[in-house]
Length: 287
Image 1 (cartoon, rainbow, N blue to C red):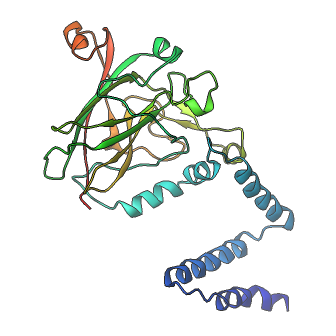
Image 2: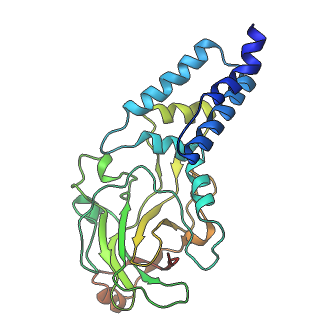
């Protein structure tokens, strides 16, 4: 009887899936098949299986309106980047995508050139100007595109993690002009650890892995007639580019943050020298 259960149970469970939607039928069937195969391969003890269930329970309990532990769980297992890769296969002329991450939140709209760094971060951090264009595949400018931007501060914290930061700090929404241009002021982001005070942190420690992400700025770009894009700009030279905890780095998204002492250029960008300058042109795919 025991052998019968082990060999026949998977087929029995699958035989009872009778979804009206064909995609639901496919996904649920494969979920049961692969999950059962995993259990047969690993042969967990009952104690280990309940520990796994408790891990998932704690992961859900750690989620709130400011933190998404399940996204973080997906990220550190490389699943988020695998889904990203499947959905954005080989578009050589289009800006590459990467993970959304768990820290996206509501942001206020800014005019071009405004500073998204407020509070002590603006005084403590290294002034940075980020500018570029949003383009169509053929190189034409995309006017009125929306850029939703968010980043960590100079010591590696997002506003939703740090009660000392103002709400909506280091995040903002910008529009491109008629030439597809955008620019804003901020501070240079820092490398930081993903949160390790929850189940995902336990998982990383059990795996013998570090929790660090290389310094970056997030971008979520939308424009009428074009596919949305979620991506990062990574700081060239960061020590964690080759070992990002969430596997999100792509070479095309690593750019220099150039230190500039030109006072005339500083005046143009409404900052004081020295400052850092980061330039990137995003190319969107048409719908």
